[in-house]
Length: 522
Picture 1: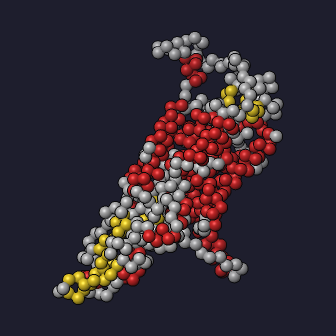
Picture 2 (picture 1 turned 135 degrees about the vertical axis):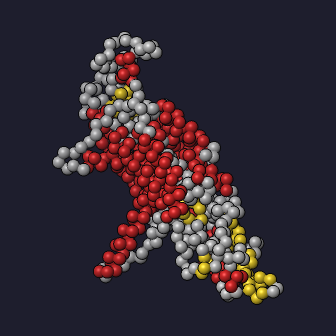
Picture 3 (picture 1 turned 90 degrees about the vertical axis):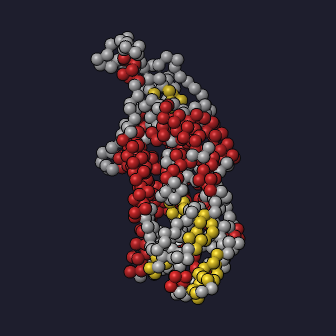
């Protein structure tokens, strides 16, 4: 029974993690139709989208069975388990496994994570997005795994074409975001380091979802319980506990941190640990704490603290170097992104535009009801960017202010928003983008085009251009005479028809500055 519970949990965890990873890195919509619901049942996206049914389900499920969410549905939990297992897989003859020990809970840090969760739900999502597990994993997948997957797929396609053995269509890998790579690599390094050394430390200390569910799981009906009559003090359970929450002197499992992985149940040869609704504990600990060398029992410091107890129970200082390094990298990433993440238009530019023309407000993705709601709900997970057909969405690097890094913004220097495509609106798990049908998408207004005659080729040089008018899918641009004294013409925008799709800005051949730009209307 113990092995069955453990292998069942591992199977469910692997299936959920693989489907979510495929959803984030796949270039087609096939996986999204199968696994799109997995993104919506994640705890924080459900909170931001006000999905009270999903929230109630996870809270009730946790109250009954403990933190099963963290060991099955959370993709970052599965990723940490995989990282923690890598040292034991590196040596075939003599497997190396880190032996874990009990660590006291870092209550102050957990309360800080809860405070960040509360602030995020009240609108400060930009703080929450850097430690929320689903967002962290989705960024790693979109900005690290997906480019590697696309490059490998194109390599296989080229190999098949060279050998003539198979035919596979090439995929558009897209422009790699330097900001996304830097933040993802920094986050990956921190989580990997803590996972190898301390297992689920991130889940039980810094994760806001784990902190919230930990309050509920403290009172869970089913939990891990130690039968002191059967326990032989072998400490096998302590060594395999990925949450480091089993205190052998007290024979207590900290249910607020236990992720119900069943490793301890499987490791116990005497059957002393069971997953049950009963509680059997000693009123007096069976094993007393020993006095450390060089300290006398009863010796009291100047502050009135027993030195023996202080030496044993003192919490280890938290390593701040990794957090400071990640902060410095995140702060410097927008400057690097602006210097290296620029792409030229796909048409031959003409040296005419000399007046800088930038949007008064950058354009948010389609499906945005209001700019404030979009910035409050979007966590920057990158799911819409990953599945954008035209690759017009990219992670922001300061367009919405530096508080909202990685939030998707429309970049019309790469492409324009396809007229019939509504893919991004159907995928958003937090409802920052509201679903649109294709008919609604055709009528949805993202912004309004603005023309500067000083940069326009037709207006300045008299060259018959009209590329913007020919490309506009809504027929909102007409070429009209500049004035009565010259035959030169310039584009004129009809505000009642313009939807801000960006086709005109993308096709405009003026350089180095465009003659037409889209202003966001939200």
